[in-house]
Length: 222
Image (cartoon, rainbow, N blue to C red; front, side, top):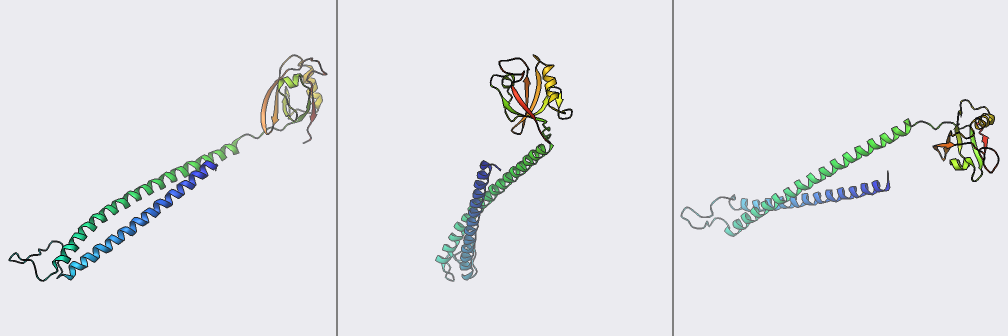
């Protein structure tokens, strides 16, 4: 996992924790409102079991004397206000839960995508062809020589040199024979350099120094 992915995961976890904390706070507020609504209904119940809609006047139109009108009116008013508050809080809870579920769904999709990408990368890594075995190594190169011009470098491990490869290599005389018969003709040379396969074109030719290549090659003991 990259540092950017780790940072993104940490931020996502913090955001989710904050969302859950917010929902818990809303649920506490909901419970408080419900307790207050019950308390006000208890007040109405204590007043002859009067509810929210029973008339507060008698049959002659006079205020009822058997109940505390102030307490009843106050309780009814409080209940109406608290029910509105309850409805608003429940809407907030619903929206917060929806956002939390959407965030969780997005995280799940991202995790699945990352898992698939990791599995694909592992599959590509396991299916990638192994580097071929080298039979010789370059241990010195003269500046300005054909080998230097071709891009050959010290410590390059030779996998293929013209028609010579790991399967048919017996001694450096095989390489020398190919060089002698290829003067002025480009040869395909494949080397392993720092764990990577490199393809070069080397043309044996006469130059200011000795030989036709200007490099020294030693066989590898396997």
